[in-house]
Length: 281
Image (tube, rainbow, N blue to C red):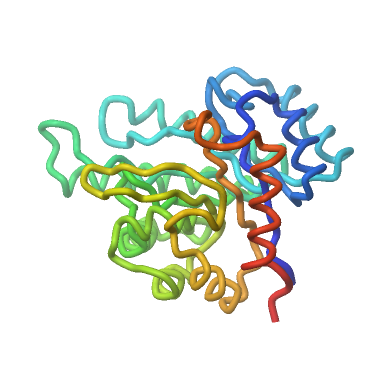
């Protein structure tokens, strides 16, 4: 079975969802990962089911799959908790209509609100994720908790802990190795080995790291930065992973640091296929 590749609409801030699907198909991606936000290609708080079905019909005609829906709801602890959970359930409904297997979740926020003990912050985050996962499970949608700065789950160690506390079969890791490497708990092939049991989805991106404290980095094309991708991709292939590797091209956040997606994302797809692509044995 083959690893599949998707483009992330973070890389196409000037394009709507239809234009992004067309571009990614032209570049050669198998799938598309979509930013779910008011300034993304899909706004989960305003889109209707009819509009979602129209997007799915167009994707079917183009011949491209949805790999992941990436929303930014994160706060499971404060008085925003109920709204966050409700909004994430809506994202799961949209994923179901799009036949998208996975939605991205942050592992909460890295700091508890003032007046909340950390243990309570952790527990509320776990319980909130579990509630979303139980809802999504009924729709045959999976949850991928991302290893990401600003959350409780930047390292593989902490992401595995929260997944095991949630204890739902449809919950796994969105393995974003660039942040794992920066966290410094696990590196290289050891990071993949620690995460392998739970990996549902993967992000790739590269940057030139100048300093960790304060964090100073510059986004760049794959293979031109300081993230040590080769041993990671080699080990990922050894695990038999056959899900999506998604190019999280950060053009949305850093418009002046990266070439236009027609150039940069095409380069990244060719690079990843050369280093980590091909068929698993």
